[in-house]
Image 1 (cartoon, helix red, strand yellow):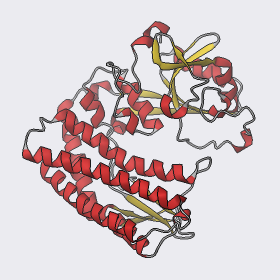
Image 2: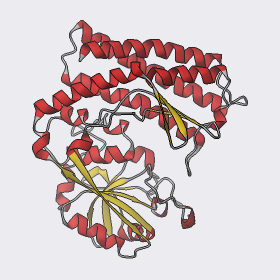
Image 3: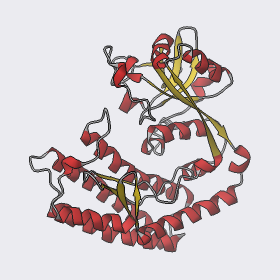
Image 4: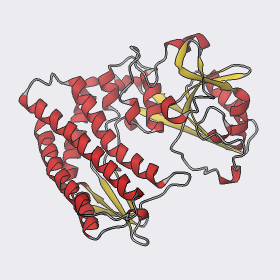
Length: 364
């Protein structure tokens, strides 16, 4: 990509300078895929949004051995439609000094490259640590990635979720596009010499242009999503029993009645427990925000049925947001147990979600 072309790109912003609502509701990996897609193909924004709709149903994970709890929206049978139209090519380099040259070769071929590396060694990153112990770095897929766009002899140009992942004192932006960061290539070279996982995208533009087929797929996706809620069910995976849909919410209430200790909530290496819980709930109500954005973009919203669906979806977003704050208060209190107030909030959510999925079933 030519350096001059960088000024026309938009990542977490739209062309009018406003926040790109969809990209901010996706995790780092999916937001990178979304941002590369929207800068690579000329298709309607509502169609791009539809590819990133995910199952809004809750999944409650409970460990069979140590009673660890996790609540998210990992679906039992649905994956976002982008997986059908975009192929990810993954490359991993461990302790290879020429990793930076490999990245340059991908950029020279015209790719925007999704990068996972030891960002802790790069000064722009909000967790920068000059004394970071490389032996503690987790080499599995990480929650944080960014997009590498261009390089020069001494610089790299990249896209970051700036408000959330940069140290503003060390973050330098490209003078022709403030959505793009600039950093010394030597810092990236050092980080990647320890570890690099990167991805390029192969986008099936021919199939993406078949709008009628994609609309039918979206309708089928939404119908299955509504069906998932009422069918509920459970599954055993990785030593956990996973409860889905309405059964997840009923199990949630049971844990409240048992005064479950929230200090047993799932933890991730390098994350505060509060951040893990916040992220999991954000994915739940963020999925609802993406669905709301799609419905707003594709419908006239004048019918009584449409207004009812949109209003109920907004209320669902609000209730899950309030529940997340309530859970974090419990986590930080002296008594870390779920309680009758938690149960009452979940009971209200069951009533609301049942109504939402009924409306959604009739709407599509």
